[in-house]
Image (tube, rainbow over all chains, first blue to last red; front, side, top):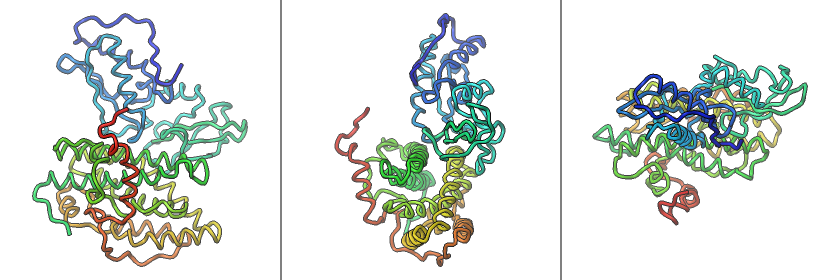
Length: 179
Length: 256
């Protein structure tokens, strides 16, 4: 799969009147298939970026919270969200960018954390995003599980990651920073 | 001297431009290291910090554009204003120099930035508080990183110490702006919107790190005759904007 590519499972397109709770469930299901373009194994829902989905004046209204102020994927994600919803028959969805409350890695779901780990990215420790002055760092190497790791660089290939190395298996790996 | 703004809307737009322009100009300076940094990790770090600042600048510009409501959007504000219209702090526009200069500049700015953003999270203006709360998380990383580099260069070799000392000495006069406020800033602080003067907190934190890094404590910077917040810049800004704005100037309204 290429970054940013939308892969849809077989699913009947939405056809009914856009009002019901059941349709909101469908919208969530649909959003759960929109992957982060830079980490294409974790959905925007699992990253905690979708803050709300609701009906408003006959349109689906979706609130999206960017991860970092300067994340270059912000526009791509909003476009992907719109494309995915339209693909499933939600016409002219309204995408709103919300900054408050500020996105935190605590919103990443357990499923999202597992997906990150399986992809080779150490997930951030849960519930520790309050004090970012001292990032606790990765709990374990995502390759071998060793807790003996060292930081190579506080910043990695994207704003949300830092670069670490395992001192046992010696593999370098990305760490999703605690924010 | 600044005139006090009769209406809060214009005063606020002006204040937001100061925040946005400072972020924008510093981001541009940091990105000049792309392909030139002393180590790959440092290059990646500086590009990341620059990107954070660029994103924050856009958030401030977006809000400023809404308040100005004169048809200019964030891109227009960033790419089609001249140096006399730019409201950034003078320290942001200073040339990147060697790595000691970049480190000292970033550190002096980061301490100020962190203090200002902390206060803005308490702003009575909800939009400002929201942008600031997001930016503060990023600025916390920036501050930690530049503080560690100050210690490393200060406690490093004779050469790194000499270069860092020179850098601090040359940049110090520009810190006057970080510890001073003008009528506009006082007006917004009194209204519960702006950050006000963070000078005391800034001096305390800078002194703490200087002492740990083994650097001499300079006297507080005196009033400096230039005034970036009101458009009176050093000669460096014009060159920076000429490069940064080239595309939009040559091909107005160009899009991807």
